[in-house]
Image (cartoon, rainbow, N blue to C red; front, side):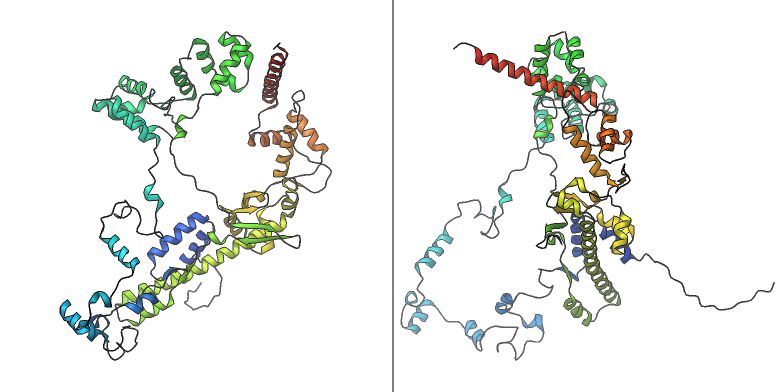
Length: 541
C-alpha cells in the first residue's frame, strides 16, 4: 500500500468551552448574594466597569468644574479660553488681577472706601452667631469627629457597642478563675472548642496530648469551666448539661439523676419505665419532667452568634388582572453595571506601551462580556420561572394539594433549552408567591401513579395528604402506616408502605406507637388539669 501526502478541507462543529462561556455558566448558578460578591470583585479589578448610578471615571461633577481653578502647568493649554467663560476657569476678565492686587492695610482700605469696613461688610445676625459658634471649643463627641460630620453622613453604627460572644464571656471569667498560666492555657483551649450552643466535643483526649498536659489537669480545668455562667455551659452532652443546671439549683438528687441518665425513655414518653427507674409515683415523675422542661438545653444560644442572612427572592409572582399570574424579576438583586466607553476612548488616544493597550483591550472585552452575561442570566431566570408558573398554575390557585409532577426535561423542552441549563437556573434561586417563598427546585417533584389509572400525583402533594391524615387522627384511633396506605389508595393514590414511612420520617413525624404515647400523655395532662380546676371550683368559700 502506497503512502502519500495530501491536503483536505473538513468542516465540523464542536463546542469549545471558552473562558467567557465558563464565566456565563458560573454566573447562571450563583445565588444573588454570591453574584453581588462576584460583581464587586470585578468592579475593583476592571477599570472600565462602573455601577449604573456612578459617575464616569475621570469626569468631574458639573458643580466642581464651575469653581475649580486649574493651573496652567496641569492643563498645558491655558490660553484665550481661560478667563472668557471657558471650561478651565469660571472667573470674569480681570478678576484674577484684582484678587492678586495688594489692597493695603485696614486704614488704607477704609480711607479709599471713605467709610468703615463694618459698614460695608456687615454680618447678618445668623452669620455672626455661626462665626461665634465656630470659635467655641467642641463639647460633644460628634463635633470632635468621633461620630459624624453632618446629618447626611450620620453613622449610627459608631455608637453601637460590639455584641458579646460566648467565647468572650467565658474568657472574662477564665481570667478571674485561674492565676496560673498553664491552667489559663488549658482553659482557653477548651473555650475555643465550645460551639455556639455551649457544648464541648465528647472526647477531650486529644486536648491533653496537644497541650502536653495530663488528663487529670484537663479534667480539673473542665470542672471549673462547667461552673461558669451561663449554667450548663461546657458540657459534653445533653445529660451533663442538664445535670450541671440541676446541681446549680440544688435539685440533683438520686431520682433526678436516674431521670437525666435515661433521657431516651423521656423522649419516647415511656413514663412507666421512668417511674420504675426513679422509684417515684405519678405525681413526682410529673413534677420532675416539668423541672427538666424548664431547663435550657442550649445555654450558649443567648449570646451573640453568626448573623443569619435573610433570604431574598429572585422572582416575584403576583395575581394578574386577567386571572393569570404576573412574573417579574426582583430588580434589587440584579447588579447594575455599565461599560465606560468614554474612558476607554480617552485611554486609547494616549500613546503608551503595547502592554497597556493590550490590557485595556482585554478589560473592555471582559467588561462587555460580563454585562451581556448578566443580561442573559436575568432573561433565562425569567423564562424558566414563567414556565414553572405556567406548569404549576394549580398550586398557585388552590394550594399544595394541586401540585403537579414536574421534571427538568419538561421545562427544558417547553423553553427550548438544555436540562443542565434549567438545573443551574433553579439552583439557589427563590420565588416569592402568594403562598410563601419557595426555592425553584421545590416545584420539581417526582410522580406517583394513580390507583384508578388517572393523572399521576406529585410526591409533595402526597406528603401533604399524609400530614393532613396524621394531624386529623384522634388520640384513640392512631393511624398506622398500613392504614394510611389504605386511605391513600381509597383517594386514588397508589403508594407502598415503605414510601409512606419514608415520607413520614422526612417530615419528622414519629411512628404510630410514639404518637399514641404523646397524645395519650397530652390527653392525660388535660384531664388532670380539668379535674384540678373542677375540685378548686367546688371547694366551699
